[in-house]
Image (cartoon, rainbow, N blue to C red):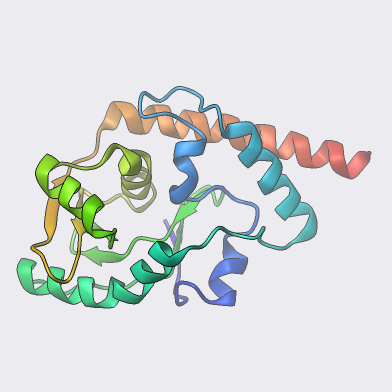
Length: 199
């Protein structure tokens, strides 16, 4: 793993992520079953465009996303107290190949933590189900793959209600499929960029 000690959300952090797949979009490359996602071509074109321009494409933002960013520090403190552990913040982690990466919300010994601060109804749904939401399956496993973490604590936080903490262990069969999918995706990305450069 290659670690860049930058602050998440800064311009420096954004530049490191230009043109490469990151864990937050791994679900657009492979499904939870490890099969090619229907969204992969759209992502391929986006990342090819980023490589050609050297700029990050505009990202979607709304009130929920902004609220999550604002609450993350508080959530990290609550998680740290519950686990009685120190959470080491990290900037951007690249796989040894340098082709894909992730930005975990914290390193915790041999593990990592992924923090979400959803809306109240979504948080209640997470509490009732009591497991890793399917929407974050690829992201969490991708982060463990990149960092080599032995586990990931998925932590859902809403200030006025109890948090949800679920420890996830790596699904090695899925991680193998994810890695293969990323290799194929990056090869296709290289070919696409080359075609555009030669056009």
